[in-house]
Length: 197
Image (cartoon, one colour):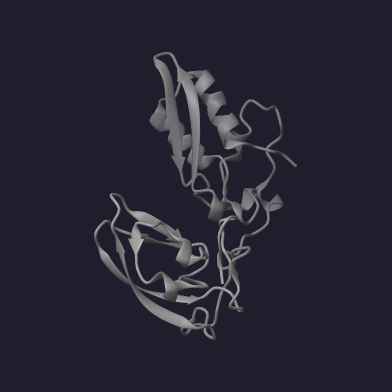
């Protein structure tokens, strides 16, 4: 088993001194293919950046889509290592239709928080800059520059997918849906010195 790192290999070619930044970006896309890396790598690695020192100064080499082909150029990847180049039949065939960790659903509508109490509120940002609120933030405790009926926001959160946020632009009226955050009517706030119940 060999470990080949894009950044190390590109820096090695920088030290050789016979390639431009554009040529190094191209070389970086040729080193390894989908069959030479773990199945998740092509789906999560979209950019590699390497800072190399050239005779005329330091330059950033950005390699977009570094795992761009089925098989990499192993002669190039192992250049200067004195390691034998393995035959391509030693590497597994990759099924492009399967992405490790990918979640697939059967289609149709996905209803967020289907059995929770909901309210619709009008919210205005009276501040001097946009405000973002995360999906699970207790809405009654948001930035005081957001003006709305806070009593109706008791034990509520934004009705948006987990991990996302809503941006409230300055002086803009926004109509939004809130869903019940907690199942009980006792809501402990995010601020330690504040409790709402």
